[in-house]
Figure: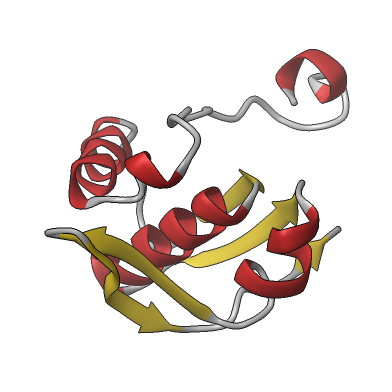
Amino acid sequence: MEKCYSGDFPPFPVIEIGFGEKNKNLDTVRYIYDKLIELEVDRSCFILGIGGGVVCDIVGFVASTYMRGLDFGFVSTSLLSQVDASIGGKNGVNYQGFKNMIGIIRQPAFVLC
């Protein structure tokens, strides 16, 4: 994003996470929380998730739980996330081998596909 659109938008921080179901866990959530604290993100901030289903799930979960909820949106990059993870409003993480064991239900402000 920065490489392609840096002239069109003000500077913005990027937090990268690994891809795949193995990264859909509380360790990844904790990593993002730590980065948000480091960046001094407050309730006026907006979080944009760019990626597939795992990114949508994690970003939706983090945005909904950090500081009791920040606004968020998605740019879905996979077909599955476009028809499922980004539009269902259900975001969760896996825990102790169980899929989507911890989660929330909250719609994003927008979804771009």
